[in-house]
Image (cartoon, rainbow, N blue to C red; front, side):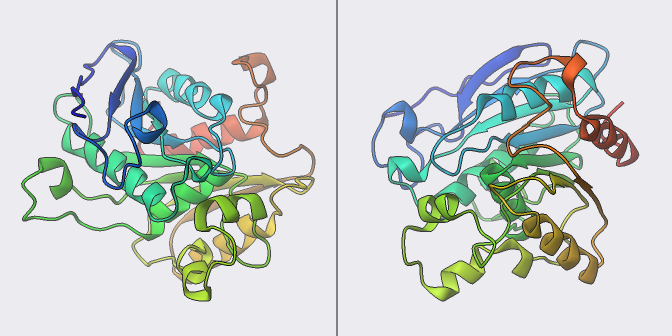
Length: 284
């Protein structure tokens, strides 16, 4: 079933539109769960920096955590960064890799291709993700391409490489330290070794992977900090700039610090990430 593409314009908030004007490649149906979308969060008029971030909520590839989507976008908008929250297809709905990667790559291409109409800089399009969404963002960092110059679809001609990445308590590996639920939802059970390697982002870092901000906590009992440590080590070997913060306390899934948007409860990483994004030329 064809979908009407309703593109937002600067100044709008919470405008939701599909990634593809028609059925998404590999769609299993036409229900909402089969239609990947972006929801835009534009900064207040006069405060935009021209940078944008595609945001991948966590949820173990089985759901999408609202506080790791819209709340992040609102915070970014307060710093002048336009946020686009990605509703990607899920393993719990029958979708397996590489569908999820195709969704985030398409999202980055779409924002870059339409940067002119949204008054964005096509060279300042980042990706951000938490938990399994952090894994998806890390795959966007490591499995990108320059676009298909022969494509009839202008969006497919755009690069899928993010210019920066922010990973919050991310799943990174599909190996020893993985989050098993995320792995099962993404790859299915008993995934073959080559597929495990392909989707273990610490093994896929490229020298032109983008600068990255990573944070997690030592107290996280859901996704071991080895995920963040091993990815940071791989970035260092490849000489990719990164900043890593490991906090002593705090459970998995904290988001900004509350499941409700409350600046009084924001965690220290929020200010640190805001400073880092400013240093990258993204945020105010």
